[in-house]
Image: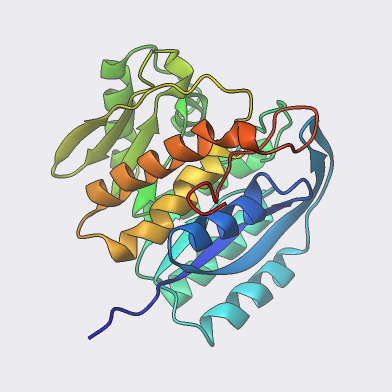
Length: 269
C-alpha cells in the first residue's frame, strides 16, 4: 500500500521577503514531499535587510485558524515558529491540547537575523510553561536555550550544550536539538538529546552570506521528514543534510541586497 503524502502544519509568522517564517516552511515542506498547511501568528514587514514592522492578530483569530485546519485536515506533524506574544502562545497551546496532533516540532523563534525581537519578553515564560511540555522536539539555538532556562549563560562548548539540552528535557520536551552554530566551530555541531541518549550531528560550516531562514528551514524540514522516517534521529540527520545543500546553493538566487535566503528547491531548479 502506498504511504500517503504527509500533511504538515506550520504555525508561524509571515515573512514578506519570502525567506523565513511561513514562506520558508511551506517551501521546505514541498521540497521534502509533504503537503503544507499554515496558521499565521504574525505579519512582518521585512526584507533581506531587516524587519521594519510587526502586526500580530488577535489570539482568537489564531484559534479560529487552528480549529479550521484540524477540523478538516489530517495533520501528521506540526511545526511551531514565531508566536509574537503570550496570548498567542497560550492560544496555540490550548488548541494543541484539544486537537492532540501526533508530532510537534517547536522552534523557539525569539530574535531575527537582523536582531529584531520576534517574541515579547513576557511570552518566553508562557512558551516555556505552556508549549515546551507539548513538544516532541525542541530546536533552540544557544541564546534561545539559555533564555528558556531562565537567563543562564549560553553554552560555550559541546559539553555545556548537552547539559542544557538535558535541562530543557527536564522541563518537559521529549527531545531537544541543541543547534551549535553560535559556537563558531568548523563543523557546526548540533546535539540531539533524547531519553535514549545523545547523538552528535556534525556538518560542514558553509561560508555563504545567504543564511536568512536557516532555523525555520531546519525545523520545518524535520517536521516534514518525521512522518517519512523510521526514527527522529534519521529525520534530523536528513533535514540537516537538506539544509546544507540549500545553503551551498544559496548564491544561485538573487534576492535582495542584504542577508538573502537559502535555496529551498536546489534539487530541482
